Image (cartoon, rainbow, N blue to C red; front, side, top):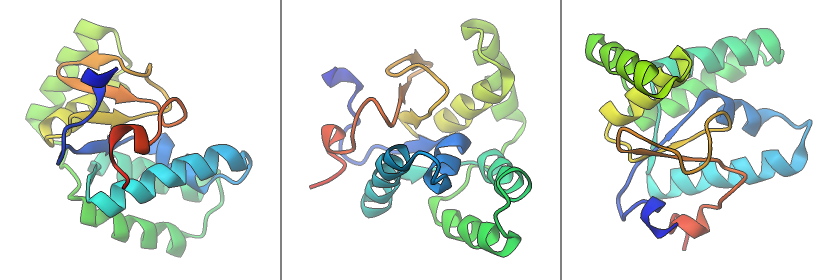
Length: 154
């Protein structure tokens, strides 16, 4: 497993469902573990995100989970500090390649493409298989490993 660990200074791209799970009190244990991940990424300034993730988070949080718009907007403003990757033509082309080669749904392929284009070595995802390697990006499932195992906490 050592090869899957991010090197010092490595960036971890966070998928939409991870952000949503951090706000979901239905499963308190899962929420706590995911919040631990986000806290570690904030502390190390190691988090990355995309405009796709931010937009999907806003829609799901407000329309499906009933979060007040002002609260969701405040969270999005904070996540702007993670330098959201702008989905451009090259990112879409890369996503199409990932979709074709790995058989991923387009939205997941776009997450992986944005992670790679933004310089992230890892994607924190609840949807993709833990430790799957996709075009130089390693998937981490936040419930199958911890930030401490990845040297993201002291």
